[in-house]
Length: 244
Image (cartoon, rainbow, N blue to C red):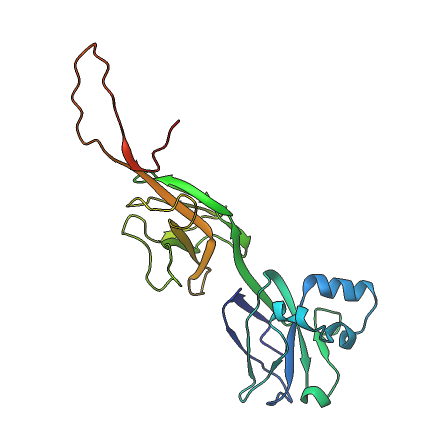
């Protein structure tokens, strides 16, 4: 009978505690994405047929997991989607047929949302001290989420944001977030720079290395002297300075 809805982040382990009558260790559970459910309904497949595992492709949906003591099972989804429907098999592999818990006239749905950031893809260039607004896109991005940039090479978001002024910011309703980077970063080719950490509402921050930002800045010359009417060579230096 539940939980009616669960939210997870793509790539993170989510523990789901199932409620209901007859739930026991050894039962099996998996999630069916909306497009697969729509295809099954279009083909007039039964719930049991729609839920039948399809092999390696199921890994992206969290795979078929065995329910443990207390009615819990762990899932790690790799494919973002706003709606997955529960498939549940009482009694394990030799037990009852698979049952689909999707909305119908006779029962309520048991669903899961898998959230993820998908853009902006690639490298964004910013200037130190100048606010840079990014439009963050993805499944589940909404007003009140929190985003920040971690250093290049960070394995996760545990180190936190780079510098106070480059710290965490609240995402607006349209997915826009404005950052001000405190220091220049190396790696205009994307090897260095910063990488995005994003925290969906109620979820821990997750690293999205495909969303990268590099900050440019001038470092010199600190002082140049010239004579009026006389051409003077000026050679700026710093990160990101290039011909043209």
